[in-house]
Length: 84
Image (cartoon, rainbow, N blue to C red):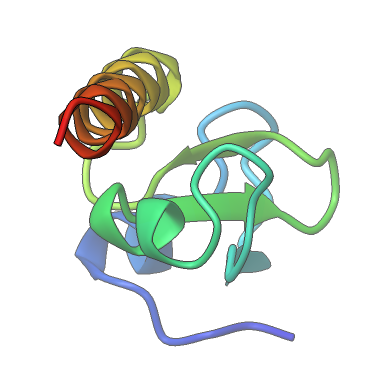
């Protein structure tokens, strides 16, 4: 299934293997439904490499930042509710 992605993916395809068939990732363990959408997470149908469809680069730094921010928010909410 090939979704209509932005100009990078349509022109270049997968930055690792060059395959033109890529799909948007709809759900991940680290970001649920929202995370992949925010980071334009895309997966190559051939080699399985995941990358940012706008830049063609790995989403690893964005995933780490997203996960840390979500953890900090959850931690703060827990202590706010607990101390209330």
